[in-house]
Image 1 (cartoon, rainbow, N blue to C red):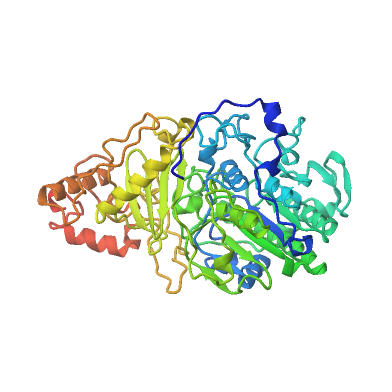
Image 2: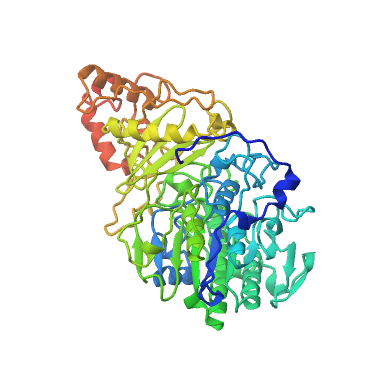
Length: 609
């Protein structure tokens, strides 16, 4: 993301790299800084947690998260919070490193960035801007600043229990840990706040069978043990990700049955399980906060909360499939896409006495800002290569807006995206779309055809960043990306629109989502290269700033007509226009269709457009 020259340095041996000390690369606190002045820092990271499922958002009254809501009300709610990837491993590795993970060669769950598939490397790989240099985690950096570091939950940046102690949390800067997605895991801590020899443990009392409650208890144990020291706790709680909560779990039994008008019985049941696990997560967070209060640590502790990516989609297969019961309403698209539903996540922060309570921040925040903020709060210096910024001046009211001098970029096998200020550009090998994402967070209206100059400028910035990435960490439209279908054509045939699709801002506006993107705007980049590292800016017929000349308008009409004539029969039906057979539920588009249908035959010919 920086204007850097990528020097291909010779790799030092792995053994040598593993001996490099983090304090060679992190500026230590000055002698005047004392432990008593160092605040505690907690990052809570939920898993496949959809934007809908934070009660304070006010989207779905069935979401029961009173503890998390209270934290957001006591601090700051970030309504445009983003993860750095729409998938678990890259998002987590980005958070740990403080950088967009593609910049160190880690683009998706199955990526090998030099340390094995799915493993956060200890050194920057060849082809990156810091090739051969140590890749430190935030735990490494805070440990060198005098913090005791703790971990409880899902690691997913490498093996959970590495025999060589290089790639599990022990080797990435964490002193005390419980590493386990379910109720079996490795630990050097017991539930009473005592250190124990490293061991794998699987048997617990009946009351601790729920995985997220167990992870919360280990987080509490870490606080108990380190209440008198400055500590950093990373709490990546494993929910609401599948597997679903068991039906003999008290949280499930006590959660009311659900009856959504647009769900069938199986989907209602899945939703109930997802909401029950979210309730258990909320209690785990509440237990951790209660422990801070018990030791009078609230005024000494910064708590940052975010999801790692959006929820999986309910419509991905004919069956429920991997849906975890969580939702992304009103955001479009699921986990795995760079639509808002894949990367916009629940996010809040609180720090009693430091962060002004009751704030709502509308501007973009990223999980990479959490890494930078944690380092700054601890007294460290944010490295130049970091892609996040210190949020504390905004949290404390010292500045009116977050000070950010560069856009946010995404590159995944489903496409590429950039958000710069109010604008988001999304593209794949077939389409380039532009949204004013502040006014249109549900990505309903493509403005690329209206704003060609802005579209070209954002595409150029995106191209320049992509060119700095190692080739294997770039979007490959001829490979895995070819299997990804964008979610801009509307919901699957026969889907009933979700009545909760309201833009949840000061004046909620009903939207027809899941409808197709409503402008004739899916532009085709003629020069998109399938060969990596040679992606050119999209070239369209929309390059003139004023209204296009009639020939260009005809070409646009032809392109739009072709994109909507889904069965190739030479006419467009109302269902094809909207991408949803329940066209009557989209009154604006239905009205426009009837205006264009000059002969009233229920079909649009190209000439009628």
